[in-house]
Length: 163
Image 1: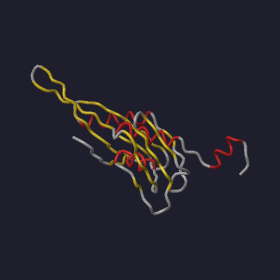
Image 2: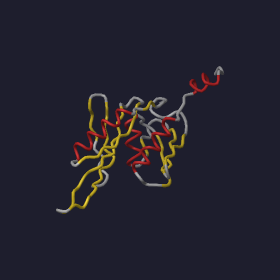
Image 3: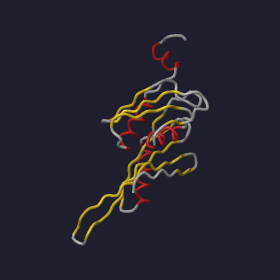
Image 4: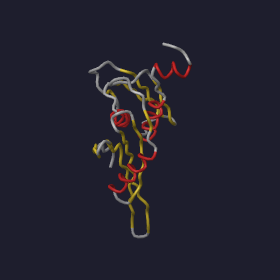
């Protein structure tokens, strides 16, 4: 099974299954299959995370992924419906460029990055991925980029400067 982008809403958390992969182990009686699920979880208000679950069936793999995602939630700085400034996220050979967009633009992103951006609650953004098309690394790069975001007020406070 390839990219299965299902969305589920559990209370305030939005879960998005980015990919489900089947793994085969050859045993004496034939092949034994297991499944890996890459899940992105967010609250739509600036918190987002990814989780990776493995199990012998798809639903338990997704549940494990969601549980894993809740353990490593990250806060993202937003400015209205977009991001405060352009940022580049890198992980492994995957690079993701995220640029703010004017209201009404929508989310211009590929599957893996789109799941991250929508889970974080960003409505208008332009993205471009470079390098590796590996979905896990793209998700990690997108989240790494989003965690770099800072507002003008936050930077002024960190530098001790008045705006």
